[in-house]
Image 1: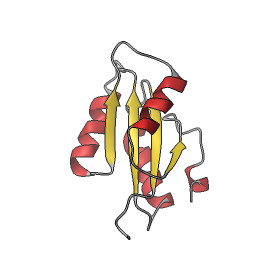
Image 2: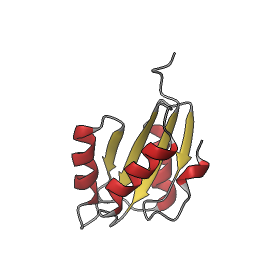
Image 3: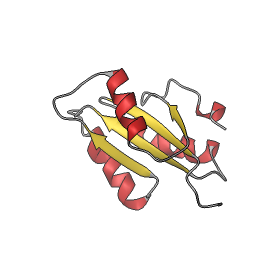
Image 4: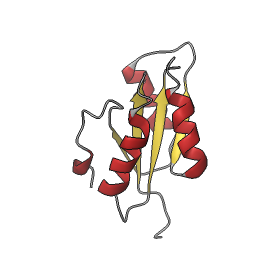
Length: 105
């Protein structure tokens, strides 16, 4: 089915507010023609990263947010994001833009 979810990109974040819209733009370009979603897993960033991602998600249903309060850690954030999707394939990309999103396809 063409509208079936193909890929979830799990994005663990902490204080990455400024990168949220840029990362979605980069994913949109790299994954053009694919049915994907971005799952931001934010460890309650004081800079409002989760709020920025939620604002984007209100305009783009591919963007979802898990805001973790009282929990921290990269591995557990990745696992939580992976467990929150129905996509058959999952990728993890860091919220600080250090990973090359063009490798995803």
